Length: 357
Image (cartoon, rainbow, N blue to C red; front, side, top):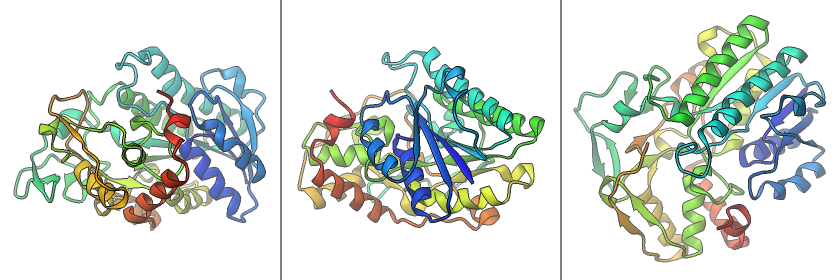
């Protein structure tokens, strides 16, 4: 199979390219990147050595995609991943829309032209902010959990947020670009008769993730702790009880492989949550405890002031992916953290390489 990966030199795109290249399945792999993210250049040499054909192209420019080779399947792993994008003063709202939504349109046009299947790696941030912000929570073992006995919003339980949870606005500008991309992808697939799958991912984490909080809080926290750089518990009383789940990107591969092989499925089965689930969920305070044991003590400041779009508990329930695809995460959170820590030990310069101050 000929597979094209957007954002191939990013953390997720690079991880998937490596797994596909090492799978022994004989795929012809191509990928493109605009290399604007610090750290992305570090993936180039290894991917070329593994036989991945690399192209310099900007997803926002339709003409950049025209000379790319034809593929049987496209994996869209390119996006501005920050929930603060477009409102943080560092990127404009127009840039966010051009990259995340306009870029998806350009890829869908490529799929229409080449009759290629399309997999969109989406996000937990498509779910509605107000009911998640108002979620009744209790602190248990230094981590928020949905309050036992409380009335929870539809589509949410102690196991996590399901695909039936509200996606009504507001979901953030970032979340809205991904939600709109999902809708367009499914419409293009239905209209022009090519397979489309939407995989809504929890926090993706592992060694090689770029050292910025918008790239993934788990890797960022460990690298910052290892380098004794300032850290803060922001909002929620400054206690660090806010919780996220995490997933290693290589655990996506069994799901992607199954989707490649079964493009003719019911429309309702084309969209699933993909996450580490409740078993992988950790609070910042719990992450700090792990870091203190691994790297030694380090102070974390408390900043109780709330920040836009922060939520107390975001854990995805992957039961639908398990039911439809027999998919489950394979890498436990302790292994993910150990892998990141080993890279932090081996590459103490990583924060400066991947997120220059």
